[in-house]
Length: 371
Ligand SMILES: Cc1ncc(COP(=O)(O)O)c(C=O)c1O
Image (cartoon, rainbow, N blue to C red; front, side, top):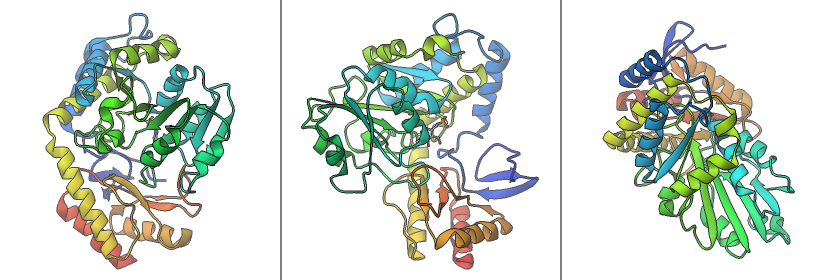
């Protein structure tokens, strides 16, 4: 078992040894950045571990409000709701989206938290497969008022949801909401880094906006992946964010997020806002790695996602590749089982904005050697 013994970053210490690291999620390279760590320490010293009360009582301390203000600024939204875990994002959102819904349809490869959240609604749950043409339409049957849920970006596959196809089907219904978990798109995709729907030019229409083709668009995510902080985030119009807070018991029933993670999250967002070059650098790094892998004859998902999975010849071969790279000082995880990946698993790549070109080229040349 490898034990992480330093902050995550291009070089990360496991079991006493520093590895060139391509795992996890800190895509913009902020989780280990000195200012982000220092801001967390300062908030911890000033406000204690946490406010020891819920947000709805007296728990809305300055670092939490700062996270929400900075997140709203980053997403170009009127407001944002910040809470303790990205895993809870869909659980919180569905509480506000269930009214009048006859059925919830969930893309079958969605993250565990999407499937769990869908079960909270007391209506039939139908799984559909977005890789099968026409499956969403078929699964809709005679339902006319639905909630459809999916990952915007597969966590280990890096595959992008076919949003255009979803909208094409859903626009014919009486009432449809498309809820996307954009944990891995926030901070990476789109002209302003606002995620998958920004990439598709739909950003202003989400979370209280006008929707698209008569379909209500809802998206949530996390600060714990690209954005270098920690905790769930739901940006939107003030009205939408208030509705979401009030519909869920989370605001009232959970301790407010810890001061240290809030202080770090606020600082990370400040850096993301001040340094758009980070995202450009990430884009260049992703391109370099994907092009390099394709040049080795490997099949790599299209798109700009910083996380993606590659299948290379079955379980034992991928375990061998992982082990041989490890011996060469490179940690590229083999993920054997996770939502949305084939049964044999994948080698899961995570590219960071602060990987140097030299480090990326070393990864490619070592893969070429061990293939
Ligand atoms: C698609 C997706 N949603 C939600 C989460 C949970 O987010 P967090 O790790 O911030 O709790 C993950 C984590 O891997 C994820 O991949």
